[in-house]
Amino acid sequence: MAAQRPSAFLSLPAELRNTIYALLLTAPAHVKQSRRVATRGLCSDYILPPLDLCPALLRTCRQIHAEGTSVLYGANQFACHPSLLTALPYLMSPRQPITEGPGRWKIKRWYIYLRLDVDARFTAKQLEQAFSGAEELEVEYFQPAYGYGDNGTLKLFEGIRGVGLAKVTGGSGCDAEYARTLEAMIMRPIHDVSNS
Image 1 (cartoon, rainbow, N blue to C red):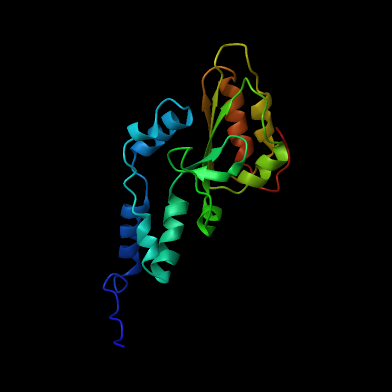
Image 2: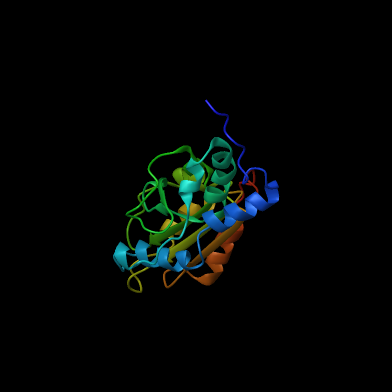
């Protein structure tokens, strides 16, 4: 049996390989807006623009898998399930979640879309376990009509700590001052338990 020739790609410097991984495995700018539309159920999947990622690259060899997985799961913001949280993450469409594979445990950038007019299907403890220590957490809240919800669901997020960048946005149902306060709470160090 003939010996396999070394890959020209793997002979490139690591910095150049990382640049190539970023080009092939990082979601394009339109994904964030497309995910918002898909998460709200405002369109069918066939209307969404193509994702233009090349995750099949990770199947070529062990070294490429080891190097590229951290880019795919670490550089992209994934949305979480509204009740199962990080158990069924997805990049663009909730109808195409990641259901298996060790890569989903490497996700550190999260987006969650909340309705304030329905009871939360998670606890504060589950939120802490899911999101504490994340690099990024974006919480977008929604209230279908004025006066049908309150900050109760958002208050469950007050125990999360150690997030590098927190962003709390939405329409009516929560005042902007509380949203900024919540962002500051979420970004406190993990061992800081004060709520003010």
